[in-house]
Structures are given as structure tokens and as C-alpha cells.
Length: 445
Image (tube, rainbow, N blue to C red; front, side, top):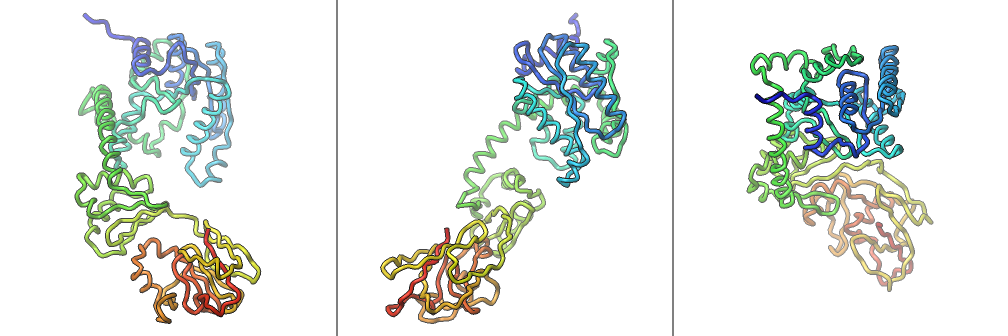
């Protein structure tokens, strides 16, 4: 008859198997004072794994927070290890950044943990996440509509951060605490169901355990499987993405014909585009729009996708503070968004037209000049077309300029007349002729 392994035996075995904690690595333990982190401390001590303790006082629960801090200091004294305590103005931090208290606390603690690890020359940072935390995370991810990554839950290791208790169930931790009579603090917010995770913990998981009393064991087995599947999935996505998403300058081009032939196109699109804020519904709409007319747009706060004739074109949204600016006579440079407009004199011999430069007959200009985004109704007389008037929209169509590039086109005006469609073509009326005595060179850099 096999003897059932104790928690300390499982702890040592799990950490050896996953190459996490050991006698050769000194770890910074994130200790809140709750039962999970208190048990983690005792397991480290029993396994003779070197460690120090870090405690964050988020100052959110008044005297209760101060009581947590005091307990953690007593724990460090009990085990004879170093303890580091940091108070945070969590509410102020959240307000200044417009984020939730939960996100603020997460950012504050992990940033501090890493700073402390480096300063104290420690190897790792350990958090006391356990198997039930992982189950809650997986259910939470499923409820949100996760991709396959969400099915493997909390990673055992992320860089320098390890979860040495991820194998242990809530029941095992509580039994260990009771057997060794470990003193801990109960966070009163854990009993409130206003947080989604608490609803899952107090309402959903008990119902699932009625269906499957061995819920923790089942999830523990499936997490390993999901992790293996994710590795295979990532390899497939990487290969498909390299073929489908083509970088051109700062934009990403997605060929429509290739997209039609891509196996599991919805998953491939979603996995790539989710990092730009696109959701699964938008991906589905994109696939429907593949055969629609050009011009359809899909937007997030981070990026925009425009359907062109042969491509979906992904453009990251930049900070567009640039609108209208005047150029006074004598000015030699002007900031245009992320680029500069440089203005110099030139000689006829120096004229070498290209799209980034314009050579203008200075005598035909009236200052101040105006630089602005083009607008509907704008027209000019394109150089080389013998004074044939053309609207910019028609000019862009003839030049086959992609829709997303049109929106960023600027024009240079003199007395309400277009002088230069910046980066494309000058107006015939301002060209340099044999009679030109003063040439002005404008160049975008």
C-alpha cells in the first residue's frame, strides 16, 4: 500500500520537476499575511530553501492593513529571514492613471518586487498562487471569451516570477495550516462577492464540485494538456502569421486572396490582431467584408484596419496633434507630425525631383504659406498635365494611393491655391521654368 505524499514532499517534488525553488536559489517571497503565503513561507523553511520576505501595504483597509504588516514582520522574525515592507498610496496611483484599484495594486507590487530582487541580488520572486486560483483564472478567462492561452491559466513561471504552490489545492493548504497551527490573517474582501473572482470562488466552483467532486484533480491534469496544446498552437500560428501579415514600412498588409486560402483564418487573424485591441466580433466582420467594396474600416483605440482593393491594411494610430500651420517668409523648417519640412534655396542645376522634394518658383508664392491636411473638394493642376485641373480624390485614385495613406496626406497652400500635394506632386502653376530666378526647395525628412 502506497503512502500518500505529504504537502512538503509534493512541494519539493514539484519544484524540482519544474526547476523552480531549490536550495541553491534565494527567493523573494511575496507574503500578504493570508493563509496561502503563510503556508508558502513554512514550506520554504521546511524544505531549507533560502528566502526573504516582501510585503506590500496598499493602505486600503486601514487598521486591517497595518495588522497584516505586523504579522508578516513576526513571520520573518520567526524564520530568521530578511523582511522588506513597502507602503503604497494605491488610491492616488489608480486615480492618476485612470485604472482600477486591482490593476494599480498589481502594477505597484510587481514593479517593486523586481526592483527589490535586483537590489538585494535575489534569484527569483515567488507568489503563493495555488491550484484553486488557477481554476478560478481558467473559468474567468472562459467567461471573457479567451483564446487557447487562457485555458492553461496561470503560468508556473514567467521570467523571474515563479508559482511554487500551483500544484496544491485549497484543501491541502488549509489542512497544512491547521496541522502546523500557522497563524495567518484573513482579508475581509475575500468574502465579498462584488469581485468576479469571488463570485467564481463562492458560487460557481461549489456547483461544479457537486458535478465532479474531484474538480481540482481534473483541472490539474487538463492544465498540463492545455499547456502542451498551446505550444503546438503557437508554432502553427507563428508559421501562418509569417505568411499572412506583411510588413510594409509602419503598416501591416494582409492579402485578401491569401486570407481566403488560409486554414482557420478566424483564429489566425484573432491571435495576431488581439494585441492591437481587436475582438473576435470584429475579426468575424472582417472575414465577411473580404468580398465587399473597398473602404470598410475597423477601429480600436490602438489601430485601424482599412479594406483596400487587394489588402486589409493595418495602421497603428499615432498621436495626431498636427492640423494646420503657417510658414512665414524666412522660416527654414517646420515640424509636421513625426516629420520635418525643410525649406532652402536652390539653383536650377540642383533640381532633382523626387516624391519627398518639391522645387518651386519662389516669385510665384505669397507668404505666409499654409500646411494642412487635404480635404474633400481640394483640386490642383498636377505638374506635367498641361494645366488640366484635377480633384485630389481623383488624383489619388489615378495614382492608386491606398486609402489609409490618403488620410495622412498634407497640402501646401499659397493664397488659397495648392502649391504641393506633399510627397506626391507639385502644381503646374508653380513649376520652375527657364525664366525662374529664385528656386525654393521644400523637402520632407
